[in-house]
Length: 206
Length: 206
DNA sequence: CCTACCGATCGGTAGG
DNA sequence: CCTACCGATCGGTAGG
Image (cartoon, rainbow over all chains, first blue to last red):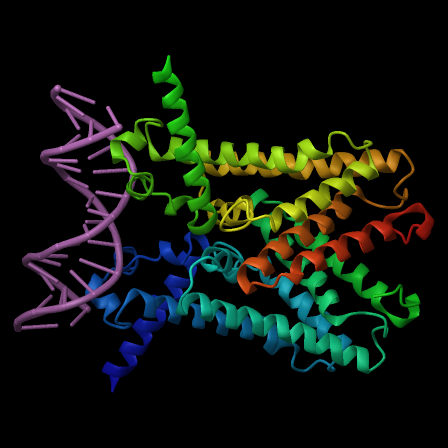
């Protein structure tokens, strides 16, 4: 009984460390020997929980997806669907970028550019998780439009393209240049873009 | 005489291959043995031109910076300074993203997220080159504002934050999802943002 | 530019 | 979960 529980706990410790390492050095930087050294265990003890490095990478992506859901999607479940929830999610997303949850900043910003040129299950998994985040934003934007909170002339996909761009740019600028004002710039950009998309703004075509 | 010329040519062949590999698999993916295999030469033949892997990485970043200057900054030198040149540079930048110049898309998009968590000369070099591109955009935006082509209420850094975000998002979406419409979305976003920043648009505060 | 080699580390397995 | 080990590859050097 305690054996199984300890096994699950060790597995989660491995995944926790693996996410941190991947956020800084990418999924290729997650080597079995390094995790073993960091966690004070043997290589076979690490890999035994997953079977192969690819399985470990897939489990790491899944664990990071769960963190994303927990930090951005869960907190906004209580919000009114539509513009209120969209705004709250973007706010939580920017907060997450500066939260220090991962040592290397946004896990998927780091990992998606790493795997985008390497076909295979790991890439497919990263595509699926990031697409879920993207689709969530588009769905809320579409709903907001149907509710009359966003002007009819706006293309929801184009709107999300721009909003998501601010999030990625903020993480890039913060991580590469250490500029803490990047997060404030993203908030400013999001507010401006949503204000322009409101029906009150007269549409502004698109 | 031909000896020195051949040496320089080989060096450029190594750097050309190194840039391609780095755009797909990152600077850590550029291993001496892999380059040697790809180019049909020995490992010592490759590393002899640079002395160490770090020097090879630095030379690769420098070579990619030269490509960036050649494809984006050189073509817009003939444009009128200010808004015309800013617009032309953004246009050339988006064209570069879809040009197939590098197998893995924008070299610096791939490499900057890789090195942002690894202090050292390679990171410093990537910071310097990307900053030069950023500063170029800010300088042109400031000039455009002084010329009355951009409204006085606009913050040039905030404007460039948003414009640069569209460029990065386009590369991200294109590389990860294979969506060719990402480039058109970036053009749409750039046009809309610049139109909103024009004095004719009445400022729109910021 | 080459061959031949160095110690370290890689992912992974055998056997317990 | 461990030790002990495998072949492959890593960055780099010696000597030519």
